[in-house]
Image (tube, rainbow, N blue to C red; front, side, top):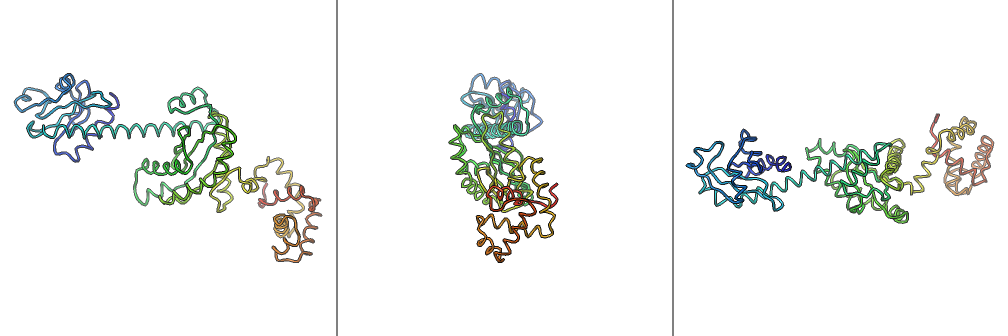
Length: 395
């Protein structure tokens, strides 16, 4: 049994730390695959075959083993896994001394072996899931057959609608390791447990680390209406998740979400949307930790940045006379305040601590520089989104 071979020596090392008797583990063919004495690994232990045939304990005293090669005094007992006999445990020592402890040691070894096996199986599943996410999300062109094979292996529905949540924790895990060495897998499990709780991860969802800096959730939904409901709860769930991570000294967190896609074949588009929001936040630092296209304020911030480059260039070309004005920054500030106060001059002037006539003069100046009518809502909207995120020398 290949799984038995893979975990045998780890089991021996784990058990030897608390037992006073040397032990060995043999496979179903009689070959030693784990031993306190590592020089015996790979050698044939013939009595193991007899133990497997009888499926019962066998005692070997000094007189019996004297003529046997690679056999020591002690007890040999069959090992079971999932109600199947798959190997033999050898406990070395005087049979009279060892026999009373044989059943307890057998149970302990079987338990330790099963725990080790399940841990390795869990690690393998985690690694497979991470490889699947990397393939699906980081490649714009993917093989449908391969994705479906992954889905069958991981018991994931290919045809479901999915959207992608990206959690960026920056260097939190690496910094945590510098302060106190830890098991990366254990730390990942802790943080994934938090994300499962916060976002109600179900059997149809996919959740794993993409790398040490990012966690991914591919959330499966049955309808557009369900997606809309989840987006309404997204901020609340994200805040809960960010609060949970503080328990593990993880503070540098950004949570972002992309749009709904019809299948796993296209979920990378949702991932790139979420990544775009995170990258935008890094380039334009704010106190925001949660990004969603369902937030109007996020869309407002993105508007001029996410317009086609050629259109954005044309808008700024038309605004060159305004941008070139020596008082441009003051004009820009006053116009934004005018819009944010719902185009009410008196309120905007009060907010800016200037006389209303001063504001009227500056708005007139903007109109002359741009040929826009600032009493026209549509004209104001166009200018507002252009100036809101204006950067010096944008092109």
